[in-house]
Length: 72
Image (cartoon, rainbow, N blue to C red; front, top):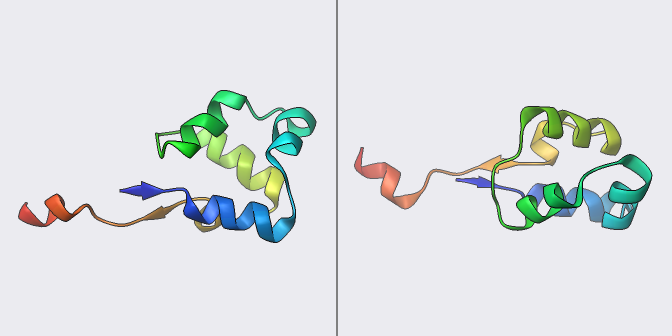
């Protein structure tokens, strides 16, 4: 499962607001809503977030296998 928990931590550490992402950097509000719901985003969007926040992919997303994945 992909988690965006690192994204929220990175925003806090860098003192960046959602308002700043949307209105100053052109990140679409639908993207923020998708992140809030742990829904998928494009690699283009991931790249833009890394650029805007000056961070790496690991600072935006993390991966942990689902419990049901262990059955495969």
